[in-house]
Image (cartoon, rainbow, N blue to C red; front, side, top):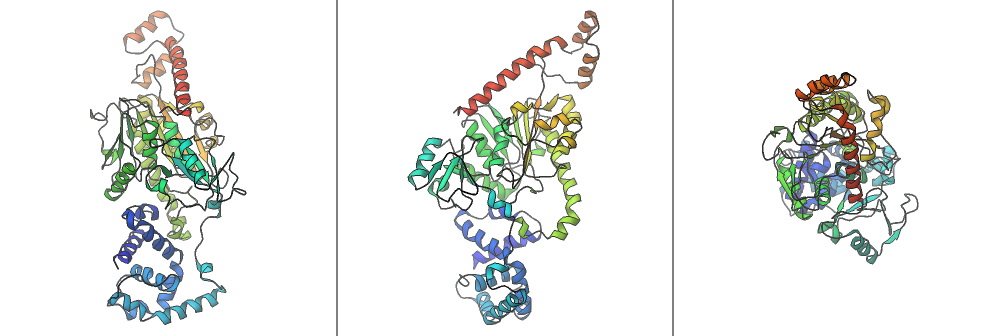
Length: 501
């Protein structure tokens, strides 16, 4: 019966808005996760039907001494009506349900007649049809084996490698390599890997293609002295991806403030053999950027809480009513955008940070372009010389970019990446990258001096020398350094594409 109590507790937390379905299920012990997940999801799919049947059968009224929880009744009645019965030893709670078994089935039949359906499946809530167009993406954990080894493994298990993926023609036995992410393989959406040996031992990680973009755009250094932060890490897919790109070298601080999600993160990192990651059970916003432990951080990945509006194969449609979404959406989005901006501004305070990637799984400009444009105008960005990375450093081969009409400067949109569900074979996603602009390798700490330098550019050399004496760098030196930096960045991209580990 503990299994049913656990499922009911997840439903209770969902009712109280204490997490998402996927997030709450990830907190269940791995040995029970698959079974609990199936019961929770199936119960939610039939929840309106189950509530109706329970009310008509007067189950809670007649068994109030044994059944004080609606959610416990839901999971138990689900197994009576839609599964193989209650899978638990005999006891008073089980008997309180079974006493009404005939009446429950009778009410279910009446409901099917009333709705004009013949099968139980027709009563279930269905998700977004665009989910069927998204392949099953499998990221090869190159820390443990090579892409070639993975391809050979799948072909030896009956899969057939194709040159390209076609959502309308690819069969369940075919797969292909992704054209943008080297370590990503594409399978038919209905192929399951939960029982696959390579998945259980961490050699492959189930991760949507768009979710792989942030780590690739951040392009963390693969060196023993590298220091990187993943500010919101659980469940750990992006963290493990960063670790792989770093070749398990240097230090990757992975922050997660929620205790249960932190436990999930630790399990994931151990499974993926991420040896360079230091998990931190703390809120990133509470970290002091000047702390010697973090003051040398050069790269930060920010993938904060968002509306999740781009995830069409998500399960949360099962717990969100349309009326509730409409009434709370604007206020919720404004609060999320405020939090997201706070995260970016905090990241910009780290004294050595050179590169910050901000991403969401949202399709709303208020969480994406609007947050970016506010960040660019913030005191933190201006004082530390942050600007958007040029488009050739942000997945240049990806065609869909940001929305120009949502930016103060429309030309900035090309430096951002967007994915649209139903059109890009991914979930909806947004990625942007901030880089610190430097002059002769030294940071300019006052944006007002920068502006004054530009205004005085055509004045005589004596005034230029005076500006230098006050801590500003000569304007003439900037173009040479910018060109040098650009060449260096191209080298980094080539290294990644050739699998630098």
